[in-house]
Image (tube, rainbow, N blue to C red; front, side, top):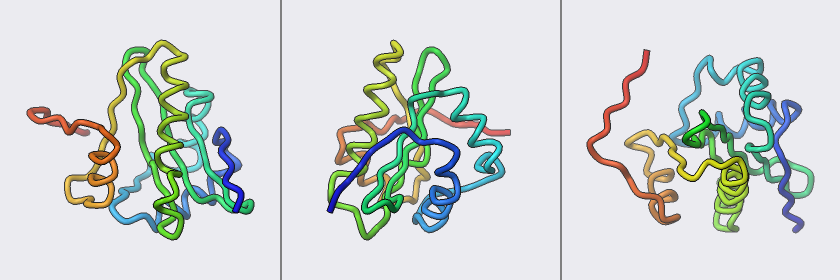
Length: 137
């Protein structure tokens, strides 16, 4: 089984959206339209990645920054492929690119009741921040 990693392009959108749609705990919105993701990738070149196995997309990570802090979204791995280090490698690739851009701190958002996601990030050494409220409009 050959596992490959490469930068995400908009050509990966349909397969990525299909993976996100079946990923437990992932919340999708109009911000995940093809045009919105195309804009995101254009604004944040070289930071988002996909993993393919046998030519089939099996993992994704969207990553960007605001010039000061990095942000990770839609880190997802096909449930049948979990446990192979795919998620960890995708995170490693994005963090390396952020560091090359001079961004030394990264945040991510996980829905509170997303047990799988929360378990992954905690096990990966990320610290859950307390005392921060997120407001959206």
